[in-house]
Length: 177
Image 1 (tube, one colour):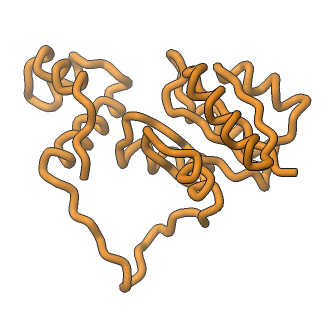
Image 2 (cartoon, helix red, strand yellow):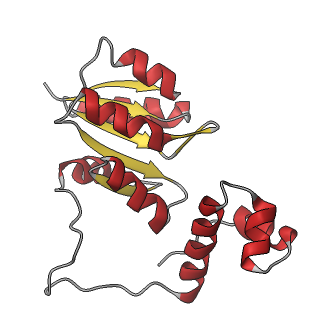
């Protein structure tokens, strides 16, 4: 029987996804912190994992290497409400098999877990969507924020904008591609 580990601080989401996958014959356990995920893995062997990018004040990226080392064959999906190219790349480099933006249906989550790992280079038959200028600006801000260790003042100085302007931009949801 297939098993799924859900690591997310949103209790309602965890319970809803657990019920949904259990109706499809998949055993599910959920953790609301990285430490509880490690504890669950001592007694539970997941075949798949859904990991949220932001787990309370921690980054879900920290649990990916642990899962990959402990369960080499596990399929890992990074799930987030604030997707960016930088975090997607980080998740894949750390060992995630796929990356999906919230909200996502159970069908989309299971399909993403079953997909092969994203290819580094698209084939000539795939269409490449060019992101909008607003999306590129948002991605640039996210990368600068990451480079400055989350320091908003330093990021604002690097980007040549006022700190309050940067804070307002960070409070908005990312624009779609």
